[in-house]
Length: 302
Image 1 (cartoon, rainbow, N blue to C red):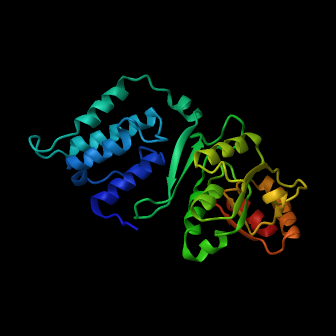
Image 2 (image 1 turned 90 degrees about the vertical axis):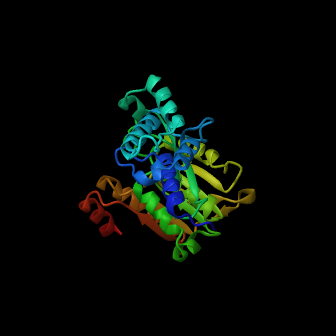
Image 3 (image 1 turned 135 degrees about the vertical axis):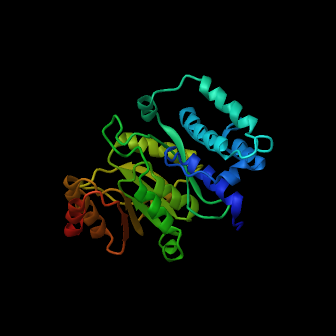
């Protein structure tokens, strides 16, 4: 594998953060020294803003905010006006965006957009997953399932480690509270899972997960299946194999599911049903501790 270093690494990391739509106010930019280099400015333009735009580029309002921050830093980086230049391409594209009518912040938060997540690594061609998601924390449908949350990203990174890869490779996986299906898609596309079953309690979220399966070129794989699963309901747990043969699960994944104490009893009931049908199934759950009492409710019930 090709390990990136120096300017190349900094520019690659900038592109990854941009495609992941990190908040422009918090977006870490390369140093002034790196940005002064005309070749580096050309890289930024060609890989982030040049037409035709990269597949699944962020919306124009986000591009405008990032480019404004970049140009401000570039202007500040100029030491010798006769030697240091700001890319005409970047400046011209910013002028184009400036002339466009932009949606308000509220309108933009309601629109779904493409976000490409990359596993944190210094190597080129790092694994990515593209997700159609909503920037807002809560959708109009009253669910948080239209976003990829931090715990999913952390768990995906952990699953790439030598100690955990074996839990996924060649295994059949059930993801509960899957939302947009990020973890399942990552396991199938990059960790060689045998099959994945994406489940969530909201039909609209499952429809969005199906679109994400297509976006990542996996729609032809019969062992990627989606199901509406409401915790606590009696249900059959299996993935449909060839000729309808049921496949038992080897691994259950869940991320950022433990945020509401009232849902814990239903979640525990679903897990108990799983374990009753397959005592050998392994479970990995990742969560961000937003409320210690809610987390204790879950751990105590376990």
